[in-house]
Length: 107
Image 1 (cartoon, rainbow, N blue to C red):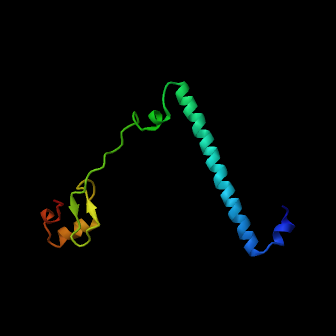
Image 2 (cartoon, helix red, strand yellow):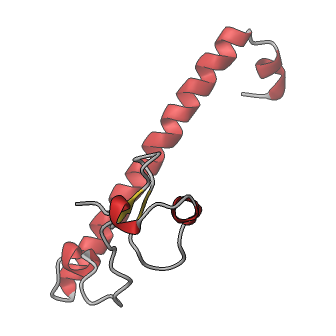
């Protein structure tokens, strides 16, 4: 399809064409991903592993573990703090307003 043909198309037809192209691009990418997955699974099997064993994350360097929140903002229950690191502004403000940290503990 050349530029002249595209320029002579209506907006409705251009949008249909774009939708078809987007669908074809997505299916192409899906096919390529599937081909890569099959190839990687074969290579892992050749080496005596399954792909899931290699991608499970076991053996990776350990990152920081997430801590459960310890304090909750009494004015906005969505804001919490683990009690580690720098105090959030809402916690500092609550202390400045005379609140006791015990009042904000999550029980």
